[in-house]
Length: 249
Image (cartoon, rainbow, N blue to C red):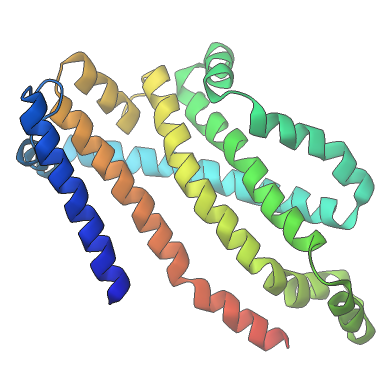
């Protein structure tokens, strides 16, 4: 209850700052009033076309995240058990983590066009997070725990399911939380640059061109709420990981 109160207070503080800034600027083209943004926000959910846009952006995010999770987890497990493979793939992962997003987006746009670029860039930016979460989780497991489990069951797949997965579940959950936040930012930026049809990024571009800054603020707030919703959903399933740990003991 105390955490909720603090969160509400923080939101109220931001709202007050917004009102003060609006009165100082006094220009709706630069900083629209909160009620104008609220009206534009409600309009998003009334317009069927906007709902279609939201759905397509979420779908692209989930596809990119799913591909990144499957490959990142797979290669992370291999790297966790093979030092040679870890040495081989670590430079690739480091390059993906450090390469400027804008540079790789432009390159992908030239190579693959606007249709596939949002998927590819989302995958490329999220893969290192999933990989590092899996690989780091496996390599940080106490060796004594592994030795104890091997005395009882030395099969790889049963050990992966009943021993390694429960122990690295927290690492994977953290990687997913980071991936969703980063994924939304990267995906919408790629949609914006490529002007992908039926996308939130394209809606932001059109709103900017038409000087509809209330729409820009409304779509931005929606993206923030989407990120918070995904975070709540992942945190909601935290008890499942705890149940797996208990059942493996």
